[in-house]
Length: 147
Image 1 (cartoon, one colour):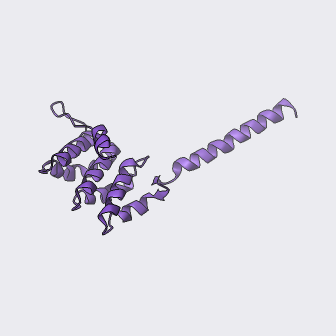
Image 2 (cartoon, helix red, strand yellow; image 1 turned 30 degrees about the vertical axis):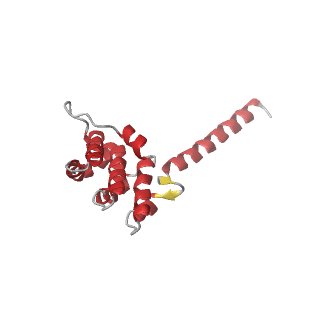
Image 3 (tube, helix red, strand yellow; image 1 turned 180 degrees about the vertical axis):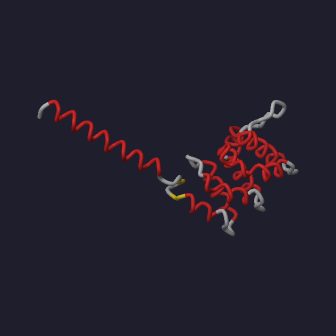
């Protein structure tokens, strides 16, 4: 083989590898091999442990799925505390993409439950930015407490 053929083959292989990488980047976010739609449905389960797992999945999912924002906002009103906390943390990790959650998180911030208040405050800080006089607890502490 001459040099030109070798270079051509290398370029072709690099192109094929780049195309495969782009395909994987365009895939729907998933957690444990299950897509966003699956986890949205799990948030509606009658089983509290399933809903907790689903909310936690969204907290851990990368990239963060903007399509889950409405379901996570609804989960902020779940009767199970860990569903609410994980949903708020997931919304906070989405940052400005979760802007629609701001009113529900402000309501959660008024909860009598201290961890809920702190997670809501932290999520709001991530979504809209912390004000100079308000320092959010941070999602890192949440990760230590509930992961």
